[in-house]
Image (cartoon, rainbow, N blue to C red; front, side):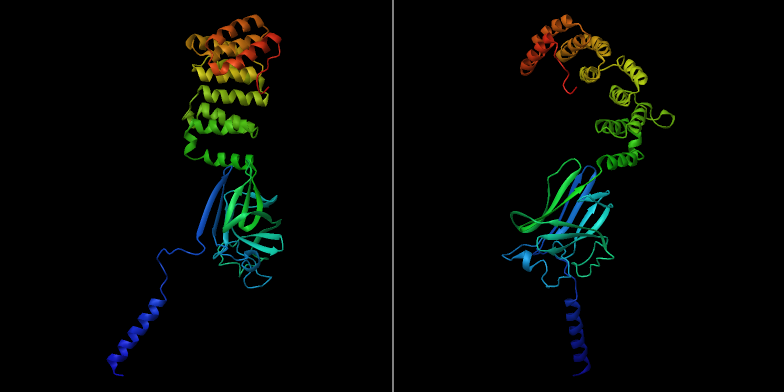
Length: 367
């Protein structure tokens, strides 16, 4: 073989080897397609990232999850790379604490008992190199359940509450569930503290929203009062101050919950002098009636009814205020006026209210 022929042969040889060594870059359908799902629990984002194999007529729980027959080899809880589960806040898994972060998810199988392992190392190919001593941050044992047949392996989010959700791996006719729960009050309040140091520090609505959430969940009330005051008074040198009916009402509600009577009375006295629309007046006066303050409610209602004479629900609130002040006659007289203007769908309840006022048995809902 002469020099030219030898050179041509080597060029062709290396070209062939180089071609075989290239990575595949085209998007080609895979037998175990990639799936990523994120759901939010409170303010905690939970993401499950996995590849989803199909049963294809196989007895997957016998022959697939441990195809090498090695009892010491865990299963990647999916296909290809290990399944990855991440949490943006601290959580509990079946009551066991787990720090915020991203975890490789692996499973050991022993009959109908499954050991779920959350590994700090979250980027393994399969489970072949999982070191249970070094890698696993948490292991919990669970039992499997029967479920409707699922051809593709998938993860379902079920049985949700405000602070808990069950994540269930389903494949074939078997489900492996585990419960994730969060400390809702702790995680939300910590998130508020973080967000209120950012751009939201200049928005009165953000401070009020945080204070109102704490009020509604009966948590962190002293700090919530500080937040309500920040919404009203603004920040450094009063920057972004915005005293209005909304945040003043939030402040009054917090003062009432905290039993700060003198400050509550002062805030209500200021509130009822503020310019309010009919719906704001309705909300304020219902709050006052629920908390046994009928006279301040009347003080707020009188100018509002003059300003909004067609707002029948304000007249209803004034009649109820008179009832709680012991003036049943005035209450019934105004209820008769309300009956002429209230919408048809409220008439049945209005008749009940009139009867309860006549009998002296009326109570504000929720009290």
